[in-house]
Amino acid sequence: VVMAWERRHGETSTFRYWVKSIGDPVADAASLAQRSPVTYARSWTTPLLLIHGDKDDIVDVGQSRLMKRALEDAHKPVRYVEVKGMTHGPHSADEVRRVFGEIEAFLAAHIGPNAGSRAGTPKP
Image (cartoon, rainbow, N blue to C red; front, side, top):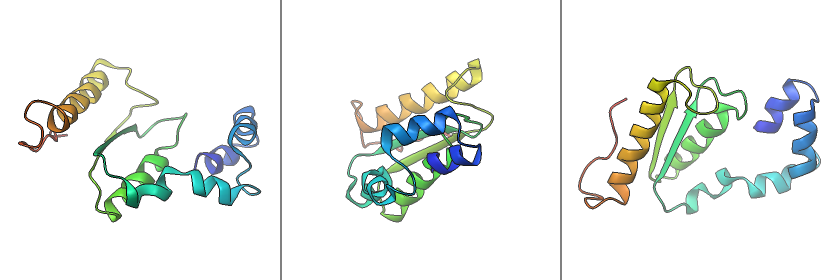
């Protein structure tokens, strides 16, 4: 997904970096698919929290959406939070509160002293 997104923006230095680092999206498609986390969604066992800003200009939000769908289709434990207006990480005080609130609730639900005894998913 990231390579297609970068290519749409032209063969930029970022695109060339990814080709050099992980491979060409056409020539190395099979290898890239084999290494993609989406490929292993069915074997996933640990609850996963995905938080992504819908305005992220570094990592396309489609990557998190794709992973979420793959995990849900495999009936795996996933909590997906898409923060409206957030870029590549929380910057405003509201974003910081939202992101860290989600992390705190997720950890409390899955590794805290009462893990498994409550829903652990905060209201959006």
